[in-house]
Image 1 (cartoon, rainbow, N blue to C red):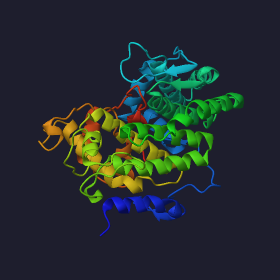
Image 2: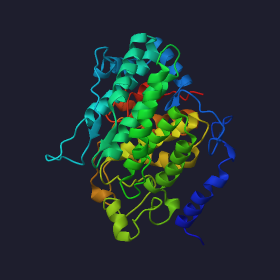
Image 3: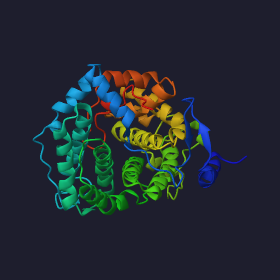
Length: 407
């Protein structure tokens, strides 16, 4: 009998041949493809949030419905929502790994926060219709596209993933919302910035890095691909998702040990144990970074859902390929995040419960499109709502995705 690893490898090889095959999802009437045909137009706005979802947000906030109204007020009253917010662009953003006294960071926090501010202002424009918010979002993005040229140091890939994912969401809303008024020459300059200072970094292969890197970089790549109407970049992001997600979230059907990313050098039991932070026993839902801390697992859950959500808005059902992994990961980590004692087989009985605001997008798809119940994750999301921002790449997702399946 062929091993689970062999079957997974064959599935990856056959994926391009099946690219034009379509299947009806659990949502019932919606039919999704495995890939976007090369002559198909992208749907805009369609990076993480769709036009229908944005309209639903406005309707719920205007009607004073909770938790959306509280989520909106938190966003509006944050520093990112201020009319007086001022961008601080850098020509070179330099992000060394760890705390380096000899090579301090330059522009890393500023870039991430400015991207979040641009996205916040874009969302405020869609909720309120106030032109000042669109002007502020444009002002921030124009300031960066006028200066930004490169990212350097060890964490350049991660930084471009965090910032690039958020830039793409902000730019997509502003460019494709009536009345936002972003001049075409400034749009073109922002596109050129993404192509030269972000896209090459987030598409670089890093099979032996921790999976949250690959996933957040792919989150940025697929968002930029949609904004840039770039089919090649979009297809590359789909392939990378299909390689990484099964290797990050374990299911017992994978076999006795987890799958490994394509091209990985993690090829011995000792290397695998080290890569999984000492974990040697595997059950449905455990992830490659569970025994590191839940914060990084949360990043990966969020990024996985972001990628699949953006693909969904383009008519590609990545969710259908990983919904069992996503459900298991949500259920598994929500239990322990909520305080259930960790058994001895899991991380030696000690887990770091520091997950951030990372559940809403995945939970929305499972509960509100597929009618799949994930009670532990649902309770945790309700307890922590409204989800704010992690100040990296996850922002305001109770507002945009709680109970909001869109079209």
